[in-house]
Image (cartoon, rainbow over all chains, first blue to last red; front, side, top):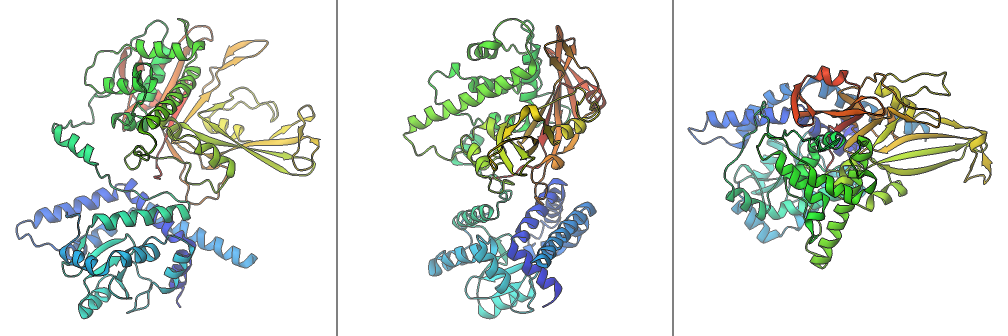
Length: 97
Length: 509
C-alpha cells in the first residue's frame, strides 16, 4: 500500500476526511470561488446554447482546469497545514502508545 | 431540473426500492458512524486501479466501486447498469442519461444520513441550498415585484427621534437592526406570536420596527411604543432620565428572550403539541455555535438545551471558569451562559499596574489566571478543605454575535468616574486564543466588527451615538435622527463603549 493510500485510509477512518472536506467547501464559498465557477459554467452554457448539446462531461472537462487555477493559494496552504497537523498528531499518538 | 430523477432511475427504484441507495449512501457517502467509516476505509477503493481516488462512484446495481471517468463508466457500459452514486457529495448519476439526476425522496434520505454523520462527528452540517416551502413559493408568486438593493442605497437606514434623553435606546436599536442574523430572522417573518395580545409583545414590536426600517421611507422614526413596552416590563428603566446603554441592551435582550419563550409556549399550547414542531430549519438565520465544538461538556449542553429562541441562538455564549486548588491541584470547572463580555479598563493590581491599550489586552487580562488570596479561600471539591486557589476564565462556546462592554464608568465607594482612555479595537477579530479548547482544529472563531456604540461627555451628562455597518465596507453614523456617512477610520478612532462583532462563518445544524 502506498503512503497516499495509507493517508486516505487513516483520514477516512478518523472522520477527518469529512471534516477537511467541509472546511474546504466553506473556504471556497467564503473566497468567492464557488460563485466564480458558477459564472464560468453559466458562460460556457450561454456560449454553446445554440447547438444545445453541452453534456455534463463536456462541461466538467472544460471547467475543471480553469476552476483548479482559481483556487487561491492561501486556501491550498491552509488545507495542507491542516492535513499536516492531523497526521503529525496521529503519529505522536502512535508513538506514545 | 426534475425532482423525480429520470425514467431510468424511476424504473430502477421500482425494481430495487430505495434500500440499496440508503445503505450505500449511509456507509460510503455520508459515513454515519465509526463502523461505516471503517468499512469505507477498507473496501471503498477502485476495483480497476485500487486507488482511493479523488472522486469515487459506487454502482447501485452490484458491488462495484470505480474512479470518476473511464473506470466507472466502462463498468456501467459493460454490465448495462445505469445508476451510480457519486460518493464525495452523494449525487446520483445515470449512465443512460449521461447526467446527474435529482430525486426528492432520495434527497430526503440523504439528508437524514448527513444529519447522522454530523452528529456522530460533532461537526456542523454542510451548507444546503434554500428550498422554499409551499407557503413561501406562493408568497413569491403572489409578490412578483422584486427590490434590487444596490451598493449605495440607503434602504434599511432610518433616523430615530430623541424622545427626551432616549439616545441610549436609539443607539442600541440601531445596533440591533443592523445585526445581520437578527434582520434575517425578522425580515423572513419568523416570529409567530401565539399571544392574543400581540401589542404587548416586545418581539412583535421589534418585528414591526424592522418592517419600518426597510419600508423605504426616509423620515425619522419615533420609538415611543418600544419605549412604553420597555417601561412596562423593566421598571428600573422607566422615567425620563438618561440611562446606561449597556444596561438597556441587556434588559432588551432579556425581555426579548422572555417574550420569545412566552410566545412559543402559548403557540404550542394552541397547536396542542405537534404540527408546529421544528419549523426553524434551513434558511440563513439558523445557526447556533452550541452544536459544534462543545465536546460533550454535560453542563454546557444542559444550559443550551433550555432555550433556542432567536436571542439565545444569536447572543448566548458559554463562559468556562476553572478554579484550581493550590493544595491538591484539583480543578473544578463551572459553565455560565453570557450575553456580553464586560472588560475592565483600569490599572491591574497584580501585574505591576498595567493599563490595557487594546481590546486584545483587555481580553488577555480577562482570561488570565487570577490568584485568589488568603481572604478569598474557596472550598475545594476534591480535597474538601478551604484553600487558596487560582481562577481562570475562558470561552467555552461563542455566540454568533459577541458584544464587548468596555467598563468606562467606574463606580466605587470613593469616586464615580468615566475612563476615557483610547482602547484600540480591530475590524477583524480572531477569538481562538481565548477559547477553552484551543486544540479544536476545525473551530472557526473569526469575527467582524459591525457596530460601535459611543458615549460622549462625562459620567453625569452625555450623549450616545452609534456607528453601524450598513453594507460591506460602508459605515454610517447614527446620531438620533441624523444619519451621516462615516469612514472606517472614524469608527476605529472613536472611543468605543459597546463593540459588536459578528461571526464570519456560521455553522448549520
